Length: 303
Image (cartoon, rainbow, N blue to C red; front, side, top):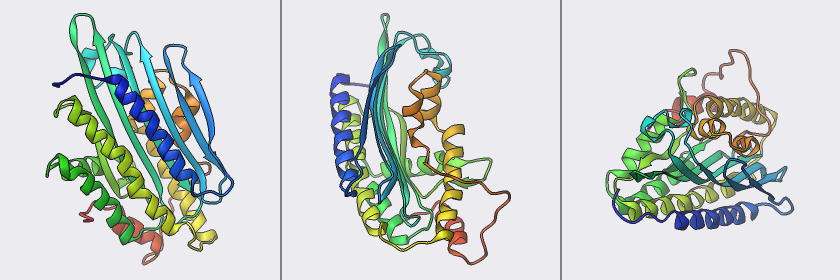
């Protein structure tokens, strides 16, 4: 954890990243625009939640910035690092979730974040975390290869082992044990990153943040006009139910936000506008729905 920590620079970058992502996603819509909701938190900090809803291409997209501060980190929020309980802290980040209307266009998620805990009698403890992952409803090999090739290429300047390590972590993280299935085709996931020193870790965070746009925008553009019908829509809503299950039961960011008494509307902006559940549903053998489970939801080397 060497090097000078510049938390203000991280906050400034994240605010600019939010602007860039909203500009890119908003460019897919002719009329729908982002609603901006700037908010404050009584216990410290605040944020800027931006939601685009009911667009022709984007059924819902949320891009949220937050900077949460507190005088004492709750014990529940420091379960993984109990030595930090009671320290004053700042947690800041940008979270993105995109739920396209077209079932052939995948849902995408990205998050980049920074955390620092301080006390008067010990050095600060800080780390970066984040990544991005893709959740297709109908899989396409070319989309999966592009998504992972972009992730691999942005990781390359930071070491040959970075992409394989963070890809594997993503495959393991976005997993629903109660369903014994992955949420999607993965991407990158990292947490507690401090091993390269502040400056180098911050550079990696920036590469991931802007790499998300390079990875997702071409896929969304490629799939947004593909014809679809009631069957595809029904399957999309069914699979969105898995997205809800993961976020409410396992996602670290959602759990931390709720435990630290964050703003509920902003924490749950990742929820799809519509989702469905069916009792003991199984895809027909040989169908495109079955292929999602058999081919795309199995971890593999896409590049």
